[in-house]
Every structure is written in C-alpha cells, then in structure tokens.
Length: 419
Ligand SMILES: Cc1cc2nc3c(=O)[nH]c(=O)nc-3n(C[C@H](O)[C@H](O)[C@H](O)COP(=O)(O)OP(=O)(O)OC[C@H]3O[C@@H](n4cnc5c(N)ncnc54)[C@H](O)[C@@H]3O)c2cc1C
Image 1 (cartoon, rainbow, N blue to C red):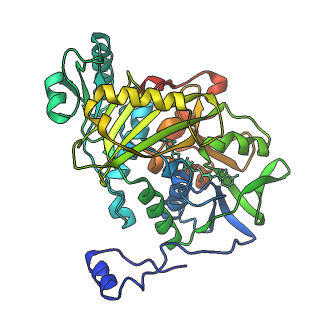
Image 2 (image 1 turned 90 degrees about the vertical axis):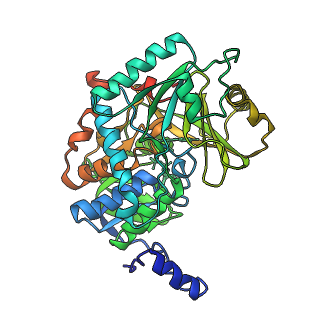
C-alpha cells in the first residue's frame, strides 16, 4: 500500500526545494490479484468514489477498480464541471443536495484540492412563460430545503454584465433564478483525488484493463473476464456511464438506457469576464469561465444514439449561435478545443443505483448529462449497496425496479438541457 504524502504548503515547499523530484506517485501501479472482495468496473468519478467509500465507510479495502482506458478518461474528464442541486422532486433534491454537501467538504476529506468554486448558478428566463416555470422551479427547491432566489433582469445583469440584456435582444433576458451554492469543481481533480485516497486505503486501481465478460456460477456473478485475464470477486459493481448497456448485455440483461453523444467546447483563455455559471434552457447553452480563463460552453445532446465521442456539427452550430445571442462580445473569441462524451440517458432522466437482475452484480448509471455533480453520492450509495447488499435510503427511489412499477422520477425538466 503506498504511503500517502499529505499535501500542504509545507510539503509543497519541501518539494520545491528538492526540484519536485521526490513526490510519491499519487496512486500505486499494481498487478491485478486473482480475486478481490469487490470489483468495480469503470474508473470514472463514480467508480473511484465507490471504491473510496467502500474502504472508508465500510472498511472493505480488498477492492479493485478496473478501467479499460485511463482513470477519468470517460465523461468525468469531459464534462463542463457544473455542480448544483436544483431538482424538482424531493427524492432527487435529497440525493443531489447530499452530493453537494459532500463536495463542500471533499477537498479536506481527500486532502486534494478539487477546486470547488461555489460561484452561483443562474438559470435564465427568456419569456414570461419561462419566468412562471422558473418561479415554480425555485419554489419546488425551497420546499425541498434547497435555497434558490428569483432574480429580476437587473439582478441578472449585476451578476453577469457580459450578457446582452437589451430589450431588443433576439432572446431577451427577463430574469431567472440562482442557486448560490452551485458552481464548478475541477473534474480531473475529483477523479485523481478519489483515486489517490482510495489507493492509500489499499484499493487497487487497474488501468488499461477492459472487462470483456462476467463469470457466472449458479446464477450469481462471481468475477469478470478482462483483457488482462480472469479476476474473481464476491461482488461486482458497474459504473460505466455511456457503456452501461454494453456491460449489461455482457452480463445477460437489458437496461432502459440510451447512449448519446454530448459535446462541449472551450475558447482561448481571456481575462476574467464571467464569475458565475449561466444556463439558458431556452438555447441549450450553459456557459462558465474556467480558472485558466477559457470560456467553457456546454451543448445539447445529439438526438440520435451513438458511441462516437465527437458530436455533430449541427449541434455545434446551434450552440454557438445560442451562446452568441446571449454574449455577443464572445463572437471575437477563437475556439480552442471541442470534444464529446457518451452519456447514459434513461426515460425519466434519473439515475439507477442498486442491484441488477443478476445476483452479486450491482450498478450505478443513468446520470445522463448530469452525473458529475453526483459523483460523491453515486459512490456513497453504490458502496453501501455493495457492502450491505441493500439499497441506501437515498437510492431507494432510484432502483431499476421503477421501470416495472412505473414509479418514475421525471427530472428531464431539471436537467437544464433538452432530453
Ligand atoms: C460534454 C459533457 C458535459 C457534461 N457536463 C456536466 C456538468 O456540467 N455537470 C454534471 O453534473 N455532469 C455533466 N456531464 C455528465 C457527467 O460527466 C457524467 O454523468 C459523469 O461524469 C459520469 O461519471 P461516471 O464515473 O459514471 O462515468 P465515466 O467518467 O464515463 O467513467 C466510466 C468509465 O468506465 C470505463 N469503461 C467503460 N466500459 C468499460 C469496460 N468494458 N471495462 C472497463 N472499463 C470500462 C470508461 O472507460 C470510463 O472511464 C457532462 C457530460 C459530458 C459528456
């Protein structure tokens, strides 16, 4: 087990004095064992957080996270880093707000700066009807115990002066609401922080290792076949986002998941101009400025199923057009990078966390376009299910069984972009 260097101003100074040549690796490079208590398929944020909470909350450290590429190389490293808990239904509010609270203490918990920036998140209203919908949304949040404040156009203007607020604008801004605790966190840091903390507790992080099948004995999953050989386990968890249905098929069951590409892009870095997060459900654009100065622009889904991590030109064009209607001055920016990730959308835009039809196999998926904010709670609740065999109280409403019973939790309207 690697000894974890405690990161502090003093250790940074020591590192600098020795030319930064003596840092211990943040997580250990290991050869897989023949068997583990728990295997987690997928080294994104949810898989790594699951491993960390298995070790920390339940004392289960004989755990492997098996990742086919590199950790955080999936959607965890591809998202627009927005965190919030502005959902409509009480069960979702409880889930996502628990996650935001874990985020609020995560840098200290992991001893790794995840660069949480609670700069506030504004949902924009572009019509009288939008204003009515947003009052209903903000009221629902308040009834769920999550603070939200309605904003007039002038208040929006004070918080984001770069927006075009003229009444003649093609998409006039009439107001909106703000969740002040919303904001951004550094996505790679979340993956690396969980990986480092889990590794220090004894978890094996195995990269470049693709799961190609599940070992089944007497109707129970007892391990996985991988590109690096067979590994047995008492329990297996899947946290593979857009590839969840591929893995479910390997295990012999179907999921109500459709995989789509969601894309995002960043501009060249510029001086600080936007210190809040702006979401415009009317255009599908969500915009923030990274600490490096890039304008980060998130787009809508490509509305056809795909595993191609690219994103269509039509959506790119639509989202650029929408962004420029909101921020005309951004027309002078050069775009630096664009990318896509494969997201796992379910019919009610809510997650699935718990057992599968296969004994011994558990799953965390269905976060679709909004699972970065849910990494802490996704890991916490999947760890609980793997450790105890029972669903965590927060995850009860989010079982696969709801697609049989019809007790859906339809959060499509709160996902910020059209689903
Ligand atoms: C462009 C974009 C913008 C987004 N913006 C936001 C946002 O602002 N806020 C927000 O909350 N959410 C956002 N999301 C959604 C969010 O990124 C995801 O919901 C979240 O990262 C999912 O995390 P994960 O750990 O489940 O999946 P991932 O990070 O995708 O990890 C899954 C891992 O499983 C691995 N894997 C797959 N198949 C196998 C296999 N057979 N064997 C082994 N490993 C395998 C993959 O390589 C991958 O690393 C966005 C997503 C995208 C694409």
